[in-house]
Amino acid sequence: MSSSTADRLVYMANQIATFFASQPQEEAVQGVVEHINSFWDPRMREQLFAIAEKGGSGLSPLVLEAMPQIRKVRPNLTVPGHA
Image (tube, rainbow, N blue to C red; front, side, top):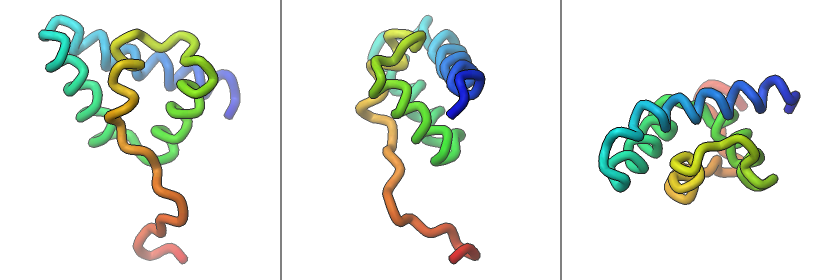
């Protein structure tokens, strides 16, 4: 993953966190989780996990708190219509 891709994903995740930050903490975390699980494709989530596993540089505390609840990409998952 290029640094510009990583920077863009960090920016996007932090924008989501900023949107939910005015809500009570538990609701804010859940909002981040639900948004990323619903709208980010598996490759984006996989790259977000790679960033977090390298220390999460630049990620907001709210995003880091949400990470354990974000769906991980399952290996060997086939997409319908693709072998």
